[in-house]
Length: 114
Image (tube, rainbow, N blue to C red; front, side, top):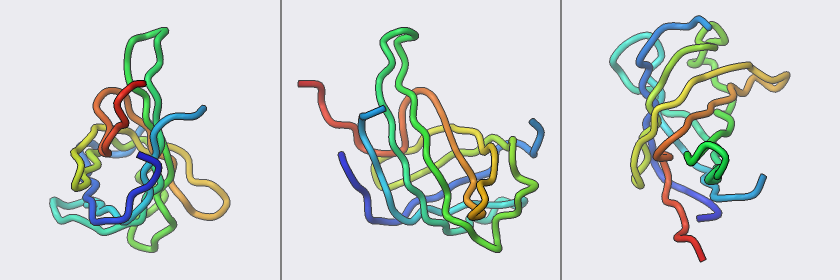
């Protein structure tokens, strides 16, 4: 899949602390410090890595006043209409976007291998 345009959810599962392939871009939801879900815009990509035998996905969450930079290091679950995947928030770039990454099943549809 090269793109995504639809609703998704990102749930906080722990507090702060700490090359080609498939892609997904579109709205998502993020529950900041409560069980509530906060809508955010995401851009995600990923690829299977044969060295460790796992699918690695990563991307950015668009800047939002509702998503504080103090959440860096938090573990989250991203859910889209195509599935969900566990990941971790990391650095915030100069434009206020959080980086997110995860391994295993991604929160988006993956093209079948050729």
